[in-house]
Each structure stands twice: as C-alpha cells, then as structure tokens.
Length: 198
Image 1 (cartoon, rainbow, N blue to C red):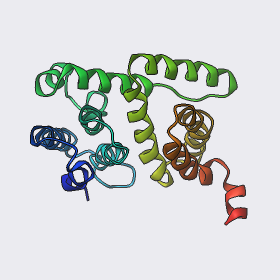
Image 2 (cartoon, rainbow, N blue to C red):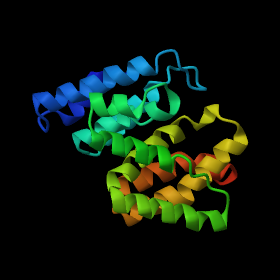
Image 3 (spheres, one colour):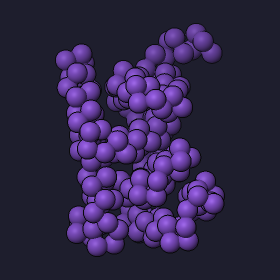
Image 4 (cartoon, one colour):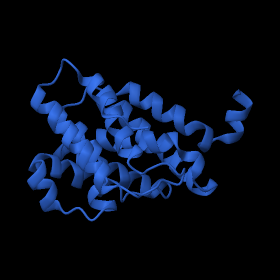
C-alpha cells in the first residue's frame, strides 16, 4: 500500500522541510481526488501516481517533478481544474502535468506513426525534459501492471515502449530507465521469445 514515507526516504537529506511538506501536500491531494477510483487490478488508482512519483524520487528528480508525478493524472482522471493546481501548487507544476497529459494522447500505430510520435516527444523535450521523464516513470509503472490489460492492448503498449520509449531514454542518457522499460515490456512484446529465454 502507498506510504508517503517511501518517497520521503528516497529524497531525505536532499530536500528542505518546506519541500517535504509540498510532497506531503501533493500526496494528500492526489489521494483525496483519486479516492474511490480503481485500477483494472482492483487496487486503488492512487497507487499508480504514487509509484510514478516513487520512481521519479529514485531517479533523483527535483521536487516539482516528483510532485507533478503524484498529480500527473488529476486533470485527466478527476474533477480537478487547472486553477486548483495553480492555486495549491504552482504554474511550473501545472505546466509539467499538462505536458504529461498531452504526451498521454500518443498511441503507437506502426512505422509511420512512430516518426510522428518521436517528433512530439522531442517537442516536449525542448519545452521541459522533465515532462518526458515523468512520462517514462508513468509508462514504467504501467508496464509493471500490464497483466491486467487485454492481450492486444498489452502487446501494443509493450511494443510502443520498446520501439519509442526505451530508445528515447537511451538517447537522453537515462540508461537505467531504458533497461527497466525494456525488461518490463519484453515478456508482453515478444511472449514466445520470452518463454524460450525462460
């Protein structure tokens, strides 16, 4: 179960008391607005933004990025408004959340779409690379829970992760994320090859 202390422990000694309070505020806010929502696994939806933020904290990201990780789905999946995010957090955090929401509209549909998807990623990077890193963390947690999706959707997400997300993480010099994305996606992208390796 999600526990704010897990995130705090990952950033302890690197943040101020005020920053710790901001993370706690975002945690409480996200938990409240996602209350009652469930994932296909049956677990509370809030576990997903929590795990996304935990991945970001583990990568050593700044406080705004971790907070945006906790809040990355609130505009899309709850009644929360942009004004509420702005008032309770900041324009910077709102910008990151909106960027992640825009990237979330990308769906890989094959070779031609691949190029367009990469272009959109690069445009996002030119605005703020943190948006893409939040999206990587979001994707990584989703890959870790793929078994609850339909087989065709699992396969599409896994292939997209291997062909778009992992190479981009590699180009950005984030080898740790590249490897984790590939490892989590491989069994669903290439199930026959995976079972042979097993």
